[in-house]
Image (cartoon, rainbow, N blue to C red; front, side):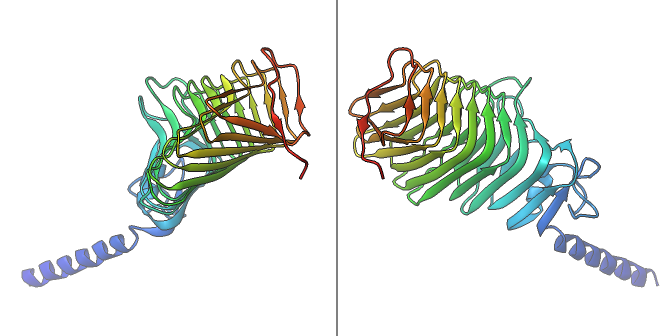
Length: 311
């Protein structure tokens, strides 16, 4: 009889473990202020922190925040969507990142989060994208980091993409958005309705030191930073930045800074004012204008673009 009971208990335990294992990962998981990280991260039994939910989510799945709370830093290692709903807060650890992305491949989407490094000691960053194919950041606030707001630094021979929209990146000690991929690939991206404000080094910095980079800065603002937008390249590489319907204003350095052969700005329907100066060009860089911009009031000169025909 005793042996029968033991066997029955063992069987029950095996069934329980199988059930737990079956719930270990799901395409959609949830976090809540009232959650617990020992839960399966389901809607009925949410986890407490994003990291636990990310670990319980299948590749390409989604993590949703059910209510306002601080949800702790995340390291992401697969394609995934983080849906913060506009009420999720993430702070970095000391000398760390709020979100670190080491995805082997695929797309990582960050939507509706507030990342804030205020009061955190050491060298901190908002989002650091080390690998993966595409980074999407939407409807978010990224501010008060000692280093970068967003750093896109993937190393790959394939095509990478970075898209940021409806997002505020402000008051960071380094660069607001820093794009410097490595490897022999190509990087393409669009920043649309993005506000870069009060960032120490530059609002946006793009470095083509290993590949070709094509970026569009559309319907956006870069104001009161070090430089407004920096574009740099080395021989054999190129970076092309289209600035469209945007404002580059009151930066303590240059509004636009093109450095190196292959570093090119194409500017249309934009206002460049209050910078020191409007733009600068070094080592065969270039700034070209479609002759439909408002360029005035820049201390140290407005710059002398090469006009292009209307298109």
